[in-house]
Length: 267
Image (cartoon, rainbow, N blue to C red; front, side):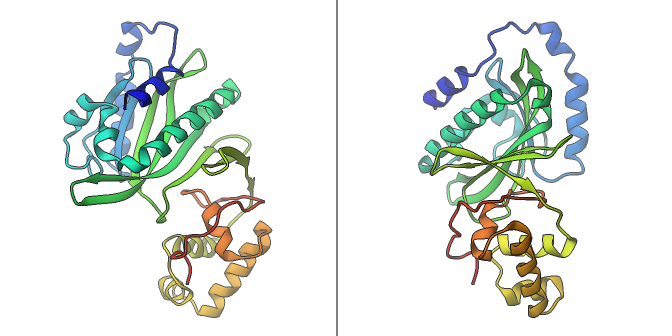
């Protein structure tokens, strides 16, 4: 974990942030807390100036049995305790690539982007795959100061799946390949509600028959939806289409497919 902190320090803010600036953050914390009451998941704020967890909110369903106070005291050591050792290099790589790409964004757009990725949390025999979204809350001289982190159950059974998405203004999104160690840009298409449902069922590993039962449609109707999705996205096989989708929401489709599909994803 010392290596992880060293990596974070390489992107740290060098300009001083006064305590007066911190006293002005109460309204920000209150606003985030209100959102935790209506949205599932675990919420916490990371302070990349002091290199600590600034606040961990009361909804602690993905804190591996620790209280918010314990997680706040642990800070980045929470990852050391709760992420499988074999996934630590992946976390380092995602952090490095995410910070580098974020710092390359136009400063006026940085607050509009969020980073998504999947990893496992574990404690003793308990293990769950979660999706973490990191959204900037405060910048200082163009660098990330405070970030909101939200952990929710992952929509598929695959670690990694790194996406950087712009939520406002002109649509923009990027996928990071851990294998190629490179970002690729997405184009946008419009999806109908039934197309979103079929995609979500596919990400959960449902077969054609299971998808049809889940959305109360016939198998032939599901096949037709899949064919339309392939036509829209310019891909030839549905098995290669799904893994390239971002975790949420389902309104981004890449023009080029770059990932193989896990064997369990489609039957």
